Length: 213
Image 1: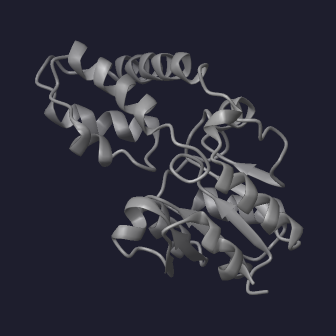
Image 2: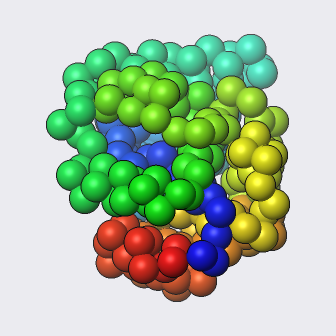
């Protein structure tokens, strides 16, 4: 096989929480009279919470905000987001994703998560994948967001597998860039695939089964 492990981004690959993120950020932006739409929201893909807030604040015209106030705003957004995530269930895990994961595992591949989200453990629990992955590298154990490769490099280290033997699966261009920066090959879906950001640009995650052989 070409690879020993596959490292998956979470949002937009394993499950889809974009709408939950959008509504939470939109609520916060509206409260602060900051213009916010789906074009701006698209810039937040694969970006950490605090970095996302800075992007939104580019159009903020109110009084200067201290770092403490920024943390409070980011926390407020996360509280709104997590409240909506409580509605998630195993039904939010697409059948083709679960079937693909199981097929890859049956091939003997190690499977990991590489996500900037600090909510990764909660989401995995909600969709029925708690304890499923061999390693989980997420926003709770990194200091730099994608396109920095830290989250993927740490996932490889946790698996004990060389980056060159790991395949990253991403839906965001920043995530694809992070995978390449970490010395890994990248397979893309969604926006990243449309932009040709991967070594393989897929219409479906099912294509991973043939890519990994």
